[in-house]
Length: 282
Ligand code: AMP
Image (cartoon, rainbow, N blue to C red; front, side, top):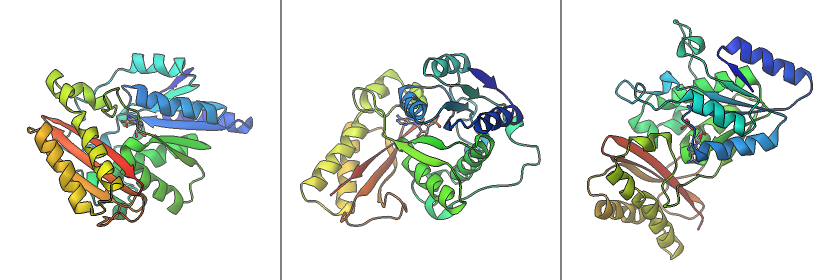
């Protein structure tokens, strides 16, 4: 497995593979890899001859008061895991190698980024789109694999890929969870032991809403209230950033569940913001 630190070295290795007729898969990550990332990596491994994993805590997707500086990092461990799971290359650049001091070009999909996470993180998806497009341009992969845990991100990237005629096929993988239902996230290490024990309530709240929809409740407002009540009961110290029903592709708000609808939530517990979602098929 090779480690690349500069865009030029990554680009030239990928170009060589493609010239040899080899297919390439890309899994973009911010590192501190967990089993959720590994499920993406294992899927990508099956889909192409060469597998590139990027490990880059992308500064442009963090707001000024967010956790860029304390975001967990462990590159030696990430390299070991990447190699064990069959990666051919890890791309781990310094921010200065990815962004020129006078970087001035941004990619945005504002229509899909205005709600949910975009409402409380106004520059987040602009940073995500820009860095993912840069990575896709460097690697020129046949496939790129993303997680449905960040459903809005995937919807935005799919729209970007379609609108800008990108060549890569984008694949979305199901949310990988701890045994008690908590969606895996690098940020889960921020949780105290007590918080960690209680946060599976988020998943339970999603399931409660899904079950009520299956039992006939189609009113999104009533279902959202049900989720909120569950969180108020089980995580009284939590603050709900949003609990919203949206169309799974357009991210437009949905008032009645007449078609598959995404319930997406973000919950602050202590200093940690956790996101989760469930696709409700009625
Ligand atoms: P991150 O390192 O958090 O930026 O995540 C990198 C990729 O892994 C993104 O496509 C995420 O959606 C995906 N991912 C993160 N956590 C999970 C999870 N628990 N299950 C599935 N995919 C995940």
